[in-house]
Image (cartoon, rainbow, N blue to C red; front, top):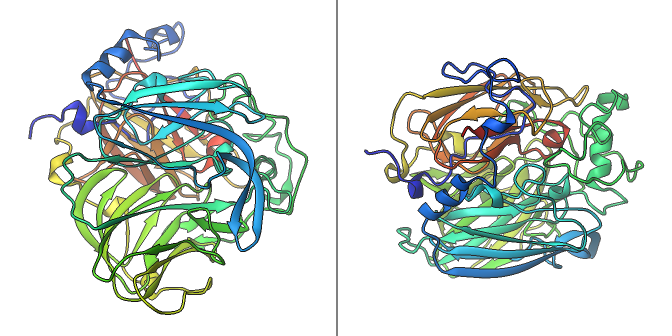
Amino acid sequence: MSRLTRRTVLGVGLAAVGTGLLTACSGSMSDMDHSSAGSGMPSSADYLSPESKEIAATEALRKPGPERRFKLTAVETPLDLGAGRTVRSWAYGDDLPGKEVRVTAGDTLALTLANNLPEATSIHWHGLALRNDMDGVPGLTQRDIRPGGSFDYRFAVSHPGTYWFHPHSGVQQDRGLYAPLIVEDPREPLKYDKEWVIVLDDWVDGVDGSTPDAVLAELSKGMGGMDHGGSGGMEGHDMSNMSMTTRKSPSPKPSGPSRMLMGATSDLLGGDAGDVGYPHYLINGRTPDKPQTFTARPGDRIRLRIINAGGDTAFRVALGGHELTVTHTDGYPVEQTQADALLLGMGERIDAVVTAGDGTFPLTALAEGKSRSALAVLRTGGGAAPTASVRPKELDGKVVHGGQLKAAESVRLESGRPDRTIEFKLTGSMTKYDWAINGKKYDPAQRYAARSGERVRLSFVNNTTMWHPMHLHGHTYALADGGARKDTSIVLPGKRLDVDFDADNPGLWMIHCHNVYHAESGMMTVLGYLK
């Protein structure tokens, strides 16, 4: 198989584009350019910037097609979670999730975001290989969108699949600022009658006075409420530099009950399941007491597009009375696999097809290790609606996650030795809440180097007792031994995960943990292309 084209490779989404503070090219890079001022290591002047001519040249290779225009407004608004629960939060319009954006591969997406929030914001297009200056990371790839301002995003969309978008500013993603992005395949090979987009979320904003910023402030004190000098918390950031933390409001006073979660464990996640005890878990913006109902006919073949938009929660998903056939993960096709249940970390997506039975069935998303669930309902016939406490037996059957899947032959990365290996040690603990990469907190001025045309291996070494869903911007990567093409992968505690990608999308790209609180505490770094 010849080397993948730009269209096939789409983005080297190796969870390795974080924004750590480590010196560029540190770690175990055998062919690395040793960097650091005065020591022969690359300086900031040696890297391409989002304004470099190479960015526009790469975009031209994608052959931008017909323009699809959208307008979006980020606002503070009341949101109805169902069953009489209304919260005040931030959202795109008054919808939760935000209204789906749907385009076709080959289109040019043109979206204007107007910011009516009291803080600066942005949009990151999660999973897309797009031009670097449209990636939506304030302080790295664009200026933040200040209150009352707007920004025009415009880029070619090359690859079909299930994606989503959200801010990259502070902990805004843990409010209502997220929406699905569906890129249809003009030559779709998968056969199905209906499609159901399922967005999973954990919810705290506006409940009993809680906000994500207050949750971060509490977590940042570490276990036991001890003050560790704001290490990685609300007080410890230089707001002029932060990518996910730009122009933050002052540290909030404690508000609402404690949300620190202790004792949540999961064998599937290797131990500690999460840091935050959320009051609600949602499917498509609804609590289990007033779930969304999706209607179909018996025998319909339904495509499920499942997106985990949570801040701190992995979900185990099952449809009662049905077996699922997994078809895609993170937008890319896989060798089809049967499953009773699916496990998704934050930022991951899984597509599956199911043949609908006759009756009424619960779609349950168990908050892994947290003993709570989200619920939606599939109705094809008669029968009573399932109750909020329903637990389908399929949740305890064969559980499949993205790390077990094999790439379909059409998207398999050609085997080859890496030209460059970059090691990212995941460090920190709940005790001090000092999450970092290679022991260093995020600094956008420090980068890990790569060159266009290289095969790059990212090695994530988890030295913590917590699992981390690591996300690479602007690329998709391949898991080892013909594994799935992905942009977000769970790295279990005490484990190492190696992923490979072809460096074909120049710019400055983040790599970070997609636990929003871990990232905001410092578990981010930058992959930079050298000139």
